[in-house]
Length: 313
Image (cartoon, rainbow, N blue to C red; front, side):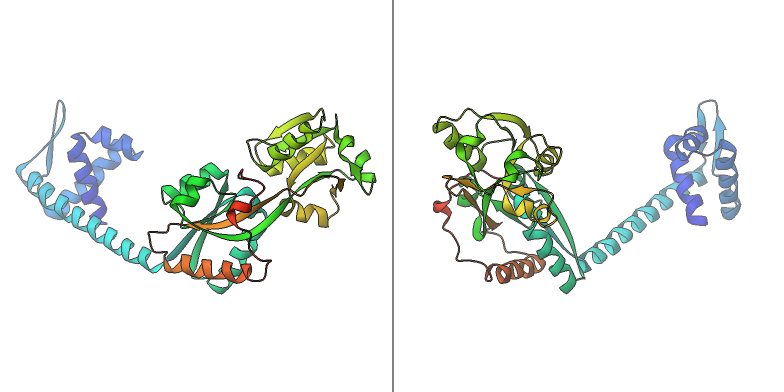
């Protein structure tokens, strides 16, 4: 095509070398030379001449270069305009989440949303609380679901309660404690425990156990809930995670939830969080409406200041 040969000529003029241009295009110098010859035949003039240092444009070549550069710039501008218009027609939604809501609540919500709004492209990201809150600050997500948001997050963003979850101790079905209908707090002493990294509701539970004089054996601290569950399945110890993260494994009877007598209920709440000073996009507004519909089927919301746990998961 003529346009391809013009782009090649502009590239050669930029490098002032057939060899450099050929290397950049991963073709042979003879191929570049042949295509330039075809371009000269199209215009009926000599466009360049060889020198000891490469190539030098003729007067005609410089005239072609000036016009060709302008034409290519106009084509790039047109291409960008067209791509921008296409992008405007595609609605997008980016949702962030801490690990606990991303295990069960959000996947079902996103599945329902995509079914009713197939025209909207949804991106779903999950990570640690501090990372998700950074995504919100830097506007990398339209909204987020955060378990136990930090005080600064609550102060700077709109945070609406969505769900409450309970910290759960669980074991492989073959574990000696899994065979009991109930266990005592004292039976946890010395038993290998598999927990998440970081400070949070789990640490509050561990501190309570220590305050009762129990000598704890923290066998493994994992970065993600998946790692905790994998370690428990390998019979490395008793795991501690929120119940929502375990629902599928409980249903498949891959793990056994432990009932511990004399242990208070440790809970944490998940919140829908988004910018309170910037209007939500139409797609985000629709998704928040769907989440609120799901929320209306749940129990009465818990006040943020009534949280037992303050650490994110």
